[in-house]
Image 1 (cartoon, rainbow, N blue to C red):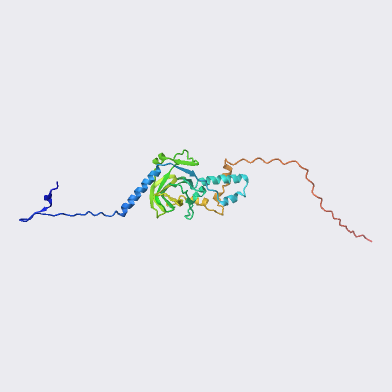
Image 2 (image 1 turned 90 degrees about the vertical axis):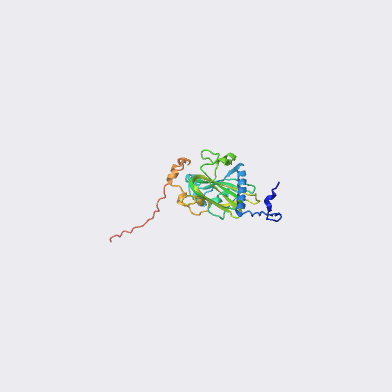
Length: 308
């Protein structure tokens, strides 16, 4: 029962009057911040669902030596040429290079992501729903910032810094690397960037973190019919130096040979991988050497005067 006495306005010597109050509650429009928050929440939920699935990464072939080194080999003997090949292989492995990608039509160009040239890029397969790349810095480094330039697409970019590869031992790098749900659960990203589809780039700063491997994982909001491409990835240290710049020499076509590209005599002599040369064979017997031709004989008459 409703107490009508609450709505009666009484006046002296007058009849009671019932007053009805008509109230309307107005809704305020959802703010832009709320929409962005809802969108971000949806993207993170999508990212979480992808993290629960396994990802198999393919190993990227090592970069080839510059043309200048190949030209230098043509002027060397077999022993020095073998030493130069072995030296350059170790030198390339000690520099930053793309190590794994989740897909791609030509894995050899994966190092375009770290060649310090935004005009070159690497494209993942169209079917790849979570493009992922692992970059080997060549050694343990201290990082403060990671950046990436990629094809503009709505989604989330997660950045990781790792001291070792998940699921590997003794620093080995197998031909394929599988990251399962348990490995994803134990990994913690140093940060993430949310792209609304208009940026095409992302950058994060974080406390100084040491590691050798950098991993970037893109989780698109919706699947697109075109391939996802990455133009450039940058890793910055405490002194704002680009830790991936050392890869430039192996991605560009140099025409000059630096002194650092050729091992010195000590490196060649100490290398255990150089095959020993066979001792020189004794000279075979042959006909005796011939005597030199005699000098030409010229007769010069002498006239002796006589007395009368």
